Amino acid sequence: MKLVIVLVLLVVGSFVFHWLSPWWFTPLASNWSTVDTTVDITLYITAFVFFAVNIFMAYAIYRYRFNAKRRAHYEPENKKLETWLTVITAIGVAAMLAPGLIVWADFIDVPEDADVVEVVGQQWQWSFRFPGEDGKLGEVDARYIGPENPFGMSPDDPAGSDDVLVSSNELHLPVDRPVKVNMRSKDVLHNFAVPQFRVKMDMVPGLVSYVWFTPTRTGKFDILCMELCGIGHYAMRGSVVVNEEEDFNAWLAQQPTWGQLQGRGPADTVAGKASYAVCGSCHGQSGEGNAAMNAPSLAGQSAWYVERQLNYYRQGIRGAHEKDTYGQQMVGMAQTLPDDAAVRNVSAYIATFTPHKVDSTLDGDPARGKAHYTTCGACHGASAQGNYALQAPRLAGQEDWYLKRQLQNFREGVRGSHEADSYGHQMVLMARSLQNEQSINDLLAYLNTL
Ligand code: CUA
Image 1 (cartoon, rainbow, N blue to C red):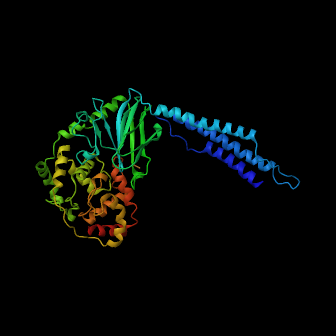
Image 2 (cartoon, rainbow, N blue to C red):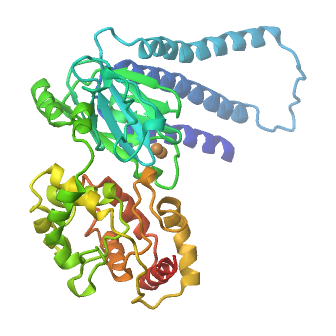
Image 3 (tube, helix red, strand yellow):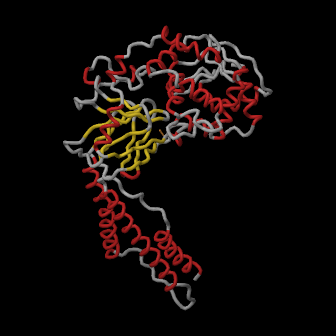
């Protein structure tokens, strides 16, 4: 009898939980209402079967419970019952599979007039490419990827010249226009998913996968990576902003084309040196850093990293936090650089400095620090040399007091909490894995040995 009660409670509880729980689809923002319908059909069928089987079981247990005066029949075969059950099960399974096949046929059948956009995944960032005026995406190859060409654009394909390159985690799309999203990955398996659009697709290195959809309302929607792709997987987030056509066009016009980026030519280190004179008054004329001025060493840093940080300062992404006193100084300094070209030139000049050995100012245990560094080394490199592919800067040769302050800033959200600072988000999460100040000191003591 107890079992009967448990079974009935299980069934009733499941239904009540389903009706009362707040967890259900996020409101739809694309044309794919049929995906929801398919899920609904599956849910109705499985709910009916769940109800019928469990209630029948409860009934059978109650009705045929032990009775010393009764004896059971032995009936190993029943053709009629088996035929009956097979037919009903077959209908149920077909009813669950068929709608999915019908929707899938639509899902892979891209409308003729769909716009095209490319999503590029890498550990642990998103970037995007539009085909430009010719409507054609230029050829790409992983062999061409580098700091000056993060998309791997082929230098020989003229169709790539007007391609619009979006090096940020935020994609904009116009509302009510069908779009085909081509996907590629630079490194490992990722998965592009936007829950409100009901789309989700693996991104496989070496091949181009796709989905299509029509955004049906304006707003901002999350892009999630839904494939475990390494230690930063959980921080691999982006967003799709669906705009009215006009706002979308205005946004798109602000993004650089590959032709424009190429037209810049190599960075001018002579001009960079002239701009650096101001920086040198704190950071030292050869970027050696100055603890008295709270200015970290710059020697050894790559141009791509310095350029990104300078742009973050200029755009208010770094140094905007009220508690980031030194960052605020840098905001002012970075703004003395008049334009992108000046930022690029000074970054290229800084990259010419020779890294040097630094003195340790902290008391830590390098042996314990080495264990902490294993996680850091996955991105920053085993000898802390930095890694462009993961956008991880060099740490070797950096002053420990500076790194300590940055780790503390990350932990407290003083650095890395700006919405647009996706690399910073990763560091916030990483820095919080260090338990206390001693762990930080140990870690930095180990870094000083590299
Ligand atoms: Cu990319 Cu998970």
